[in-house]
Image (cartoon, rainbow, N blue to C red; front, side):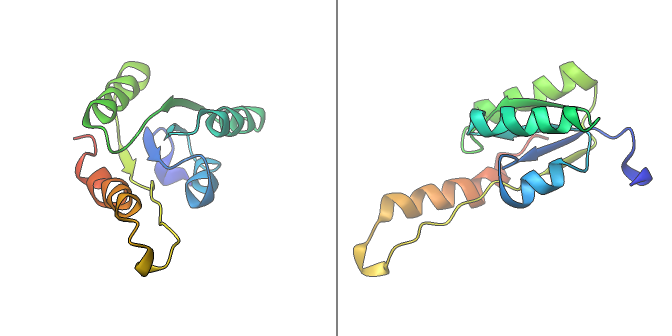
Length: 118
């Protein structure tokens, strides 16, 4: 991974799944809603000689996304890559009409990308 050496990477959805797996390979800023999982991943990366910091972030909040970018810039002085990995999917039959869960999915999966840091 020498092509990404010395690059600052922000990854959302870093507390589980492919975000977590990717995080273990990079030097980065971890962001997710679940602080307990972020702390665990952060410690695991550090224990394996990696370099990472983390910030609890809700990708549906423009303010929190701006704070995330400011945090990364303060700590590393730059942002080279942004991986918008945060996502969710409600699991329920359509006839249950759980529109609130679908609104949340749209907010995270679509608006979360829109609110990325610039």
